[in-house]
Amino acid sequence: MNFSEIIKSDCNIKRKTPTWSGQDVLEIGLTTQLSQWVVSQINAVRVWPKGVANSLKKARVILKIIVKSALFNNAMTLCVLLNTVAMGMERYNLD
Image (cartoon, rainbow, N blue to C red; front, side, top):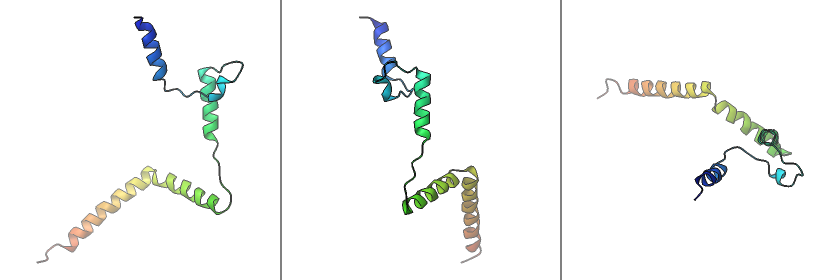
């Protein structure tokens, strides 16, 4: 049993680097670096629909950027803390 061949096949299966499917049909194969560049270029293209769906998608993208920001997270935490304090004050000294 050749363990070096088994290790090579296991490493190829667990490979996390993206490869472009088009390199199978090209006369010359792409290097790993070039295939990663192609994948990043393809992933950078954002398709926007036409009409009302365009406005909705743009609004969703903007809201997603806002909600993922640290400022929004801190503001929500502050709101929860202020709400807790306000609820505690409302019940203070009541029978």
